[in-house]
Image (tube, rainbow, N blue to C red; front, side, top):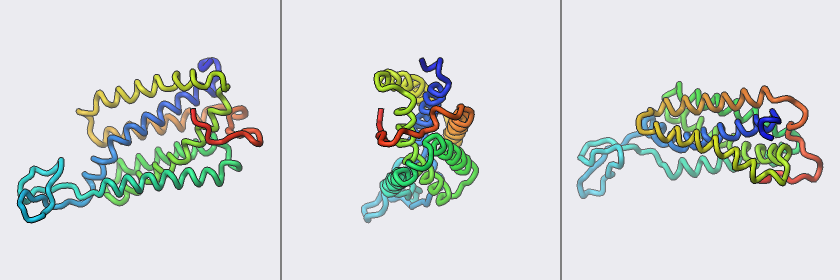
Length: 221
């Protein structure tokens, strides 16, 4: 059924590529920010100084990352929530397919920018923009699934879509030890660009993300 319907095949491919890029992002945002971020002098003494973490040698004078990981993660979640709130405002007026194309275009741009620019503040802004797009992605993708996938096949289709996703994630993890941070960001750019390609080439008409009045939005598979 997936191969017989181009719009359903496109949906499955974009779902797998986007969520695979999301998993890669989970691994890359910490080292990307730590490499660009502020540094602190570590101390192994007993004077209450900062004790170096993974990047510190544990000796006096060693440098360690001063990136506030908890605060950054909270900022990511706030941006994602803001994206979801925006979807609640525009979801009834803008087709889900159009929103997804905007998300894929924006994600491609922000990952490419993070790859090219070494500024800590700019990279953090790019990652926040990606999380904002993620907040738009989840409900828009759920609407597309609700429209294109029949209810009685939804669980089966979910399992089918998860197969290429798991293969992509395992492939990335297999090379995680030898791949550099720019390599991971490049993967994200390529996967987001591929999502944009598949959604831009999908035929108009059925699958434009417009549900009949009264149809539920934000249905999760």
